Length: 276
Image (cartoon, rainbow, N blue to C red; front, side, top):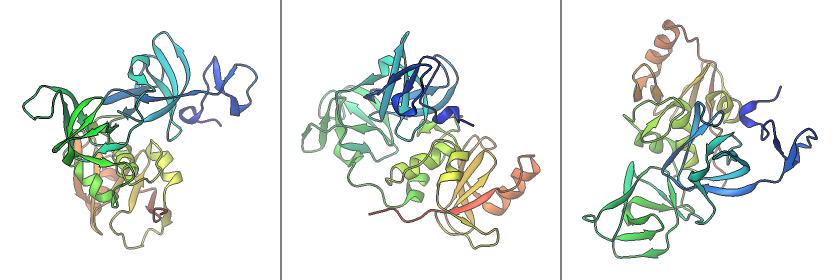
């Protein structure tokens, strides 16, 4: 059965590689997100499914009535407002702190032009003593990291999101959910990662036996939920119980989640080493 989230086709168009004959075949055109955080919706103006950050690449399959039907870097398909796309600036750096601002000039006393979350991607066009110049404005050099220098430890990235408020479908330090946290942590380390917990469970790492000792970076899955181990006893996860990204002892989490009726752990998975 086709997973709608990963199906680059709607009622009118389909990616040519699908070979469908009942709708217009398109090759798609590349574009990038031009706003700090943009909702990826199930339908034009519909419910948020995930979020995309400034500078993320998408393949645009159709524009209609102010909306674009797109496929994201990790294969997720949905709709974004068309005015949030451009194809001008190829990013070179990512925001490497919890957040930052772009300013109108190279001083922190100037007017900010944009608030940027962790993971937003920008193109550096010039270097000044304390700021990088980007198309969005001047950003403190200490807050940007070259894209060719990914983070080494997904747990460190996950911990950067501690106390971020819970947001269903959220993918940023403005608001995040369980799978958004894992996506942010792995993407910053150049580890390919699907968007939702069930897709992550199917794609990531190697399965562990239920009695295997846990270690830092292991992923713990429940039906519709995921967390990441900080050490052998404590997990970090974004959850609706706390309405935030929090630390929780794994034994407590297992008991609490089962007691509230959301089931047992479905799998424990250990990430494989990142290539290169």
